[in-house]
Length: 460
Image 1 (tube, helix red, strand yellow):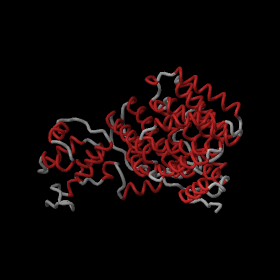
Image 2 (cartoon, one colour):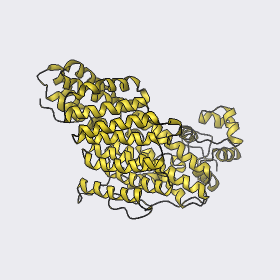
Image 3 (cartoon, rainbow, N blue to C red):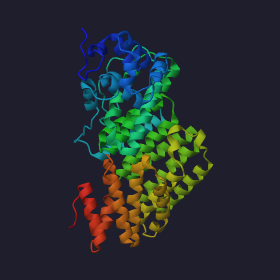
Image 4 (cartoon, helix red, strand yellow):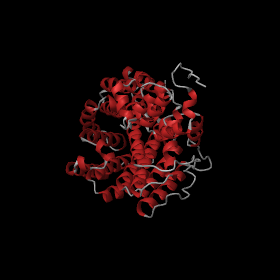
């Protein structure tokens, strides 16, 4: 039988279900996939035409060159007509079930504050105690059924997980968590299978870290789309895996991100506790940059609590740690934090102080936010939108209403193109400041526009 695929492809559809082909796809061994296609009579030229590659690229892959970039793997799967779930790249009927298992599942019998305390207790146990991998972590962690693991994995398999995580994280930064969360969770459904496979100790330890970071990204994208229970679930599993992988730097990153979730929920006291646990891990990692990042976020928590003395003290320490850091020697997760991000954090903390303590802090916030806004590229659109929102708040507080309204409009313009619930929620203080000044037509127009964008009620 030589049935053509539904798209008129020269590749018979049943080819993908041969066991040897399924194994090669599951391992993402594209050289093996291409060799098997050649056996089925698909020419090198046809493979090149379907995948958008040059014949020389196809030839190199046939000779054994590895393909690890997530976007290239996706393009190959689409071009050849591979059922994408066979490569763990996106939904099929099987992965859809697993993604549904990891979807947000609220527990109405428990208050959010109770869930925060449970996570904090778990985080403390992992950070300062023994590994608790596989333990019952409470109602905030779900345990979706895993599919049978491949027999054995090597370092190439782990590097593929790492490459996919990098590619998906770039999408999150630029377009928001809603642009890639489903793909991240589907990727996890493939990656989790590796935990049951045999491997060397070195490969297994690196696998723990790779999967921890993928769960870390799943938590962050869940948070960005408003799925708080799923975020907590993934961050909890990420923390366990990072502990198993003996990676203090990644533990610090996970705790930093979970602290940001609590800041977003206006629970700065709980956020501070999580940041302080992250600070322990950061110090154990020996990275001044990681320590500085945690200090800056602790400052944000103190600012939300109305403690300007502690906030400014920690900002000073963040600057000192940053000035002493060596980015080249910093853990991979911390290298994003440069002078631009430091300026952004200083501006954000002073914006918070301007609202919670004294309007005078708006004067300090504006130049730092301006530096960050002017330096963020298109690949950091979400961060830029946050800073534009803060900038608008500060101008309104200072009485420069026309300019504040103009900047606020820019924030909405940029945020409308993002798939991020957080951008809407971060605009709530902006709407409040604009509402206070409704007697000004520019402020009134901004308040109404933000209300339309966020779905909030306007005072009009």
